[in-house]
Amino acid sequence: MTTLLFDSHSHIQMSQFDDDRDATIRRARDAGLVGQLVLGTDVASSISAIELATAEPDVYAAAGCHPHDAKDMDEASLDKLAQLAEDPHVAVVGEIGLDFYRNLSPHDVQIDILNRQLELAGRVSKPVALHGREAHQALFPFVEAWSRRMGGRLPDGRRLGVMHYFDGDLELGRRYADLGFFISIHCSVTYPNAGALSEVAAELPLDVLLVETDSPYGPPQAHRGERNEPAYLEEAVVKIAQLRGEKTERVAETTTANALRLLGVTGGAQPALEPAGAAEERSAP
Figure: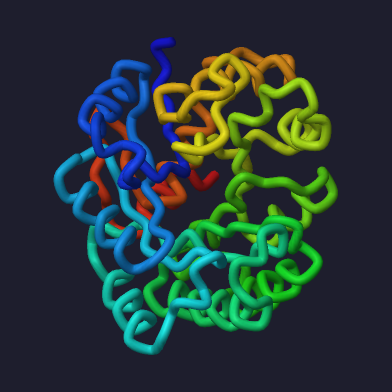
C-alpha cells in the first residue's frame, strides 16, 4: 500500500516491546504508517510515551490515567498528570474512561478520575482518548455533559477526541459522533464474530472514523495469538474498505487525515505539530 496510515492508539512503550521497540517502529514505517499515537495509562507510562515521542518524530504522546489504574491515583499523581498534559509532545489526554468489565478500580473512583481528566483536557485545550468497556450507560452522560460545556468542539474547532476501541452499536456510535468524537475501529473488525463493529465500520460516515491497533493487544485475524503491533494496521483498513465497498486507499487516506486533524498535525512522511486548529481550518469548506 502506498497510501499512508496512522495508528490512533498504541502502547509500544510497554514492556512487551522492550526487546524490539526500535524494530517495531521501523516495521510500522515500512508498512506505510505516517505515525502513531502512544497512550499513557498512568504517570509512569505517560512519561515513557513522552520520552518516545521526543525521540521519534512520527510518534505522538498521550498522558492520562486508565480506569484500571484510577484506584492508585492520589493528588500528587493527578498534579503530575496535569503537568505532563502541558508538555508540547503530548497531543491527547488519555487513555481515560470507565471499565466496568474488569472492575479493577471501584466505579465511583473511576468516575471521579474520569471527570477530573475531562476537565484537565478542557483546561489545556487538547482532545481526549476515551476507553469505555461495558460502561457506556454510565460513561455517555458524563461525556455528553462535558461536550456541552465545551460547545461540542475544542476552542480551535477540532473534535473533542476519540472513542477508542469502540465496542458499542451503530446508534451509540452516531450519538458519540454527534457529541464531537471520532470513532476508532480496532483490528478486531477482522474477526469472524465482529458483527456490531462491522456495522459501525460500514455505516458511519468515513469522516468520523479512525483506525487503531491498541498494540500489544488484540491482533488482527491473520495474527491471532501473537502480540499486536502497529505494522498490522493495514489488515483492519482493508477489512473496513471491504465492508464499505470502497477502495482501501480511500479509507487509509481519510482515516489518516482524520487522525492528523484531531492531533493538529500537518501531513508528510514525518509530520510535526502545528499551531492548534490550523489543520481544521484548512479542511473547512
